[in-house]
Amino acid sequence: MGIIIALLSGALMSVQGVMNTGVTKQSSVWTAAGFVQLTAFLVCVIMWFFSGRESIGALWQVEPKYMLLGGVLGALITYTVIRSMDSLGPAQAALLIVVAQIVVAYGIELMGLFGAEKAAFEWKKVIGAVVAVIGIIIFKK
Image (tube, rainbow, N blue to C red; front, side, top):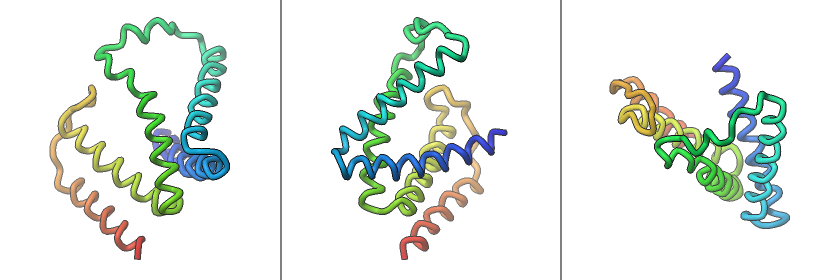
């Protein structure tokens, strides 16, 4: 089930990136990014009403506090996806975004950052990342 959800997530991100870029072309990047975040907030509020209404106050108990910066990162992600898709096109931007995600996520696992379980170094994962970078070079040509 996790594989299906991850595949759906990737597909949704690509579609969203193209849509956000289209909105940006007719407005501005921060207007589009703001609208994306606002509508995401509204969907979250609606889903909260239907899903059991967990305590919002629990957010203030989150430790470490820097974990609450996910929304800030979300706004920056929206901005950078829009800009990269506008200048590179959807396919190349998505390829670079995914490779960056793989490399950074593996670094996070290796160092056990942000509460992630620390993973052992594996050459096969490094080789996989290198192959992905080679894929970018091939895709670009």
